[in-house]
Length: 313
Length: 275
Image (cartoon, rainbow over the protein chains, first blue to last red):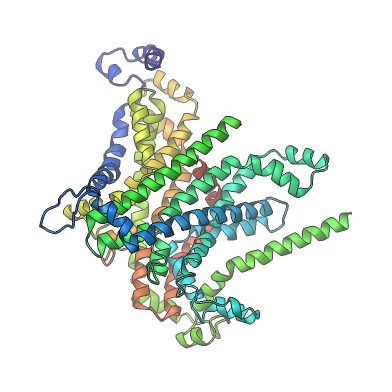
């Protein structure tokens, strides 16, 4: 393979620049020097810190003067016995799965509704997508106010005679996690919708028209024609949502700080606290390594699924 | 038949408008509360403000150092995006046009960066910035934002360049253009559509970023808008009117730009994310 490529490119490059060194340095015509600035920056900001993080995860590094020792798997043993870390792990998985499933369904529903000939479709598309562009911290504070016990949401519910639905949304430890999940979905459903709208534009209208001529109802056409053709868009939307919700930090940190108790703690939040509040750098990096492994595992599953669907096409 | 179709369609329009109204209810709360006094927020959090009161905005602007935060955010976004476009397009050009094994490996090394959560390198990088005396400065933040978003930028550019015909470059080579001139004069101008996507996606991501800016520039005079708003919330914990005015100041320009350029934003997100 490599030799074939070399023979294919070498005549072209030795032709115009036969003058020895320069030609040999740039057989493809593009010098590797163009790659250098990006690579140096990437190595400094991503590669080196990440690799050293993976090593520090096995140490008791605290940043104090009294040395750093390798402690084997002790940090990981602690994660699974520490109540806060265990809640964080559980919550992160719950958030990832429920946000991904619900947001995909909501985004798909919005896209299907707006892909029709509605007069208002452009305005609505703009509105639904707007929250996805705004800083999550600001969205979090906005919802913190809306969700206060005497706040707008409960007043609306009481005004509609639905008093039993009025809750202490962020203060009730059995509810807070679901509230956070709801806010995250509200903010980013528009993003999923936009990905689906792009996918819908790639489906030839003839397919739906001929299915309609054959007497298929709207629901049948959607289920049997449209949705299967949206599998690539679904994979993109789902993996994007899955990874970002596994790493969820901003909304939790701004709305609940992980509380009440450990009810909304996530891996990113607890990792931040262990590192920058308690100064336990080694332990916090071990939590980050667990997060990384989960992200890798989920991504592999996604890629496997994507490849299977690609073969089908 | 046509009448029924019309009614069904009207029903659909009405239903979607209703859904949209419920969906944007938080924005209604946002902008009305930002004009209310503390007493008004407590007595009627839902009603319209009784007067068109802009005092909250003045207070927020004065007390929240929002002018300064704006400037910081603009500088950080502009320089990060500039580096990303420059470094990213050059690197992607090499990676897309070279077919050697080294180039393939280098591309994969960049792609792995799409998957690695920033959390794993967070503490070592923080210590690095600390020992380089860069904490509390734009420089630390710009290095982070640019470096961290390079994989995505390179991914977008490389995909685009691979689909670009080589004829222009070959013609330029025959005319004796060196690789750098060729990139600057021939290739980069052809990349304009994807550069637009890169600018929108990385610009928004950088503008909204919170965790790393909080760590690097929180509490300093170089903090960006989300960090300033977060600090502001600590200060005005109970005065929702002033907090919301500050938040409105932070997002209204972004919303205006979005409403004017919404087509590009939506196309950018949809096509960019798909790669």
